[in-house]
Amino acid sequence: QKEVEQNSGPLSVPEGAIASLNCTYSDRGSQSFFWYRQYSGKSPELIMFIYSNGDKEDGRFTAQLNKASQYVSLLIRDSQPSDSATYLCAVFNAGGTSYGKLTFGQGTILTVHP
Amino acid sequence: EAQVTQNPRYLITVTGKKLTVTCSQNMNHEYMSWYRQDPGLGLRQIYYSMNVEVTDKGDVPEGYKVSRKEKRNFPLILESPSPNQTSLYFCASSSPAPHTEAFFGQGTRLTVV
Image 1 (cartoon, rainbow over the protein chains, first blue to last red):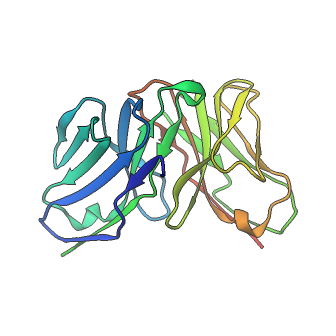
Image 2: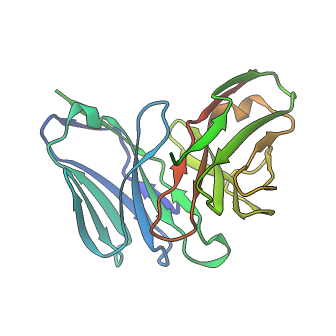
């Protein structure tokens, strides 16, 4: 099982719809969870991070964390064509010899079509 | 301005010719790491460093070396590059605390022919 796994893409949604991106992780000791957006050929940029169970909202973005299910998601409301990118889930390793390591999922490609 | 600077941005080289990709950060971060990114595989960690003179292997370290002689610099060395090391490389730095983000360099697109 991969340490961090994202829902397979690509994901295509119409403009104005809600895009839902999912991520599961295997290490129960993980403390923090990050969503990065990456445009083609560019470096990843942080959208949000979350560390408490529940929802965290920032503008059109909502991150959801369920530690019992080892699941984190990102919802993008009112999706825009400019949201078309690869979304990377990352998990902060808080235990053992790998403390401080960020482990990334394989990414989900999102396309928002007009 | 907080930044991570990688050089070069683009590099085409031949098999076996040693090369170094530099990475420098100005945020006094303890933690630095190198990733490679290939289509469908996300970001895979090559090496990371918790602090000066402390480095360790990531998930795909074969064929790479690193050093951390100063806190701000973390170069990636390919002693004998091969075509399967053709990839997009990113350097990142962060504080080793759970709720802090990682800052990425601009990326280096390496082609080994």
